[in-house]
Image 1 (cartoon, rainbow over the protein chains, first blue to last red):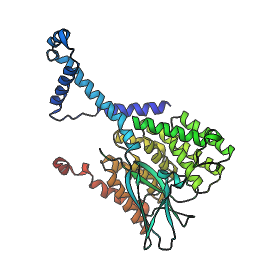
Image 2: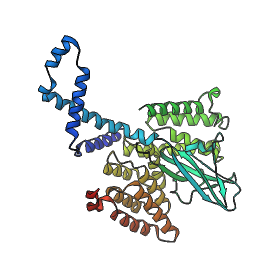
Image 3: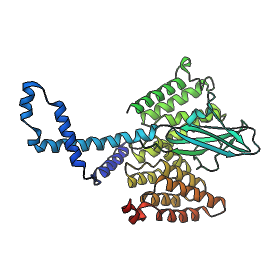
Image 4: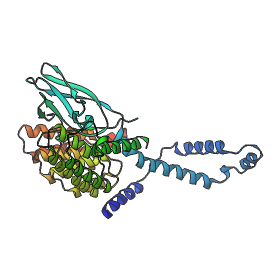
Length: 181
Length: 211
């Protein structure tokens, strides 16, 4: 447990120590946001007029602190949001192809369709021995295999092998990158 | 955050449905698992959750075992093996590793890569670089006969040089073709890694500046 914490801490420190590059418009954009927030939150009426008189622009330390806060929120947001994107991006169409001239049927099953349980197998179409099927696959790493003639397990010869306890059958690995929004 | 929360609920529902009471059985599993198997799997899942290990990959392994006609004992053995491999990987990668990275890392561990090497890569690459694909390729080339240390050095050099996932995928395809044509796996990996590193953005500063 202590090792996990230390590794995580080292990575966080490494990330936080990395120089942050800001484009030239950053200051301007932060100040626009600050002014907008200030305008939205300014109380109305007499109290608002009094509050407005104490303009935040006269206290640059507030702006600096707010800017630092924005940077911190953005930074923390990057840490928090990135795994979500990797773990659950929108499904991306993937084409599976197997050349099997002698086969009478080919299906694709894997992590992305619960290995065909509940009739979720992807049934490939035969094009003169070239079997193919396309389906949307969620972002992430998936283990899969072709099921030929309903009984023979075949790995995808064009994909990386999946290492693991696969019950003595071959399987392949598919990494689907999350789409950039 | 919403998608993660939703996914968490779905996972919990699946686990509960799969291993919970008989009346709440997952229709995909149905009565295919006997009571002792369900009990053993429930214990493994509980243990994984207690260690902070994601349980989705364990469920996927159960589905795979059922699809491939494995019996209950065999499925329990595979799930236990995966749990141990993911725990070993997570110990080195830290809690910042995503589920996909852990799945890929577990494959690499199964192929024979020491978990400590995976941890070094994670530290080298930082938080922003996902190592899902590099770990997947690492597991692949080791399973094709590339010696573990040669494979680790090749992937570390690529990641360290800023190679993108597409570069590393191309490296994997080249090594696969070379080995299938009869090249010694170690030589194929070393040669292809050298070539791939020279095409990374880090090796072409003039192009990076233009971009």
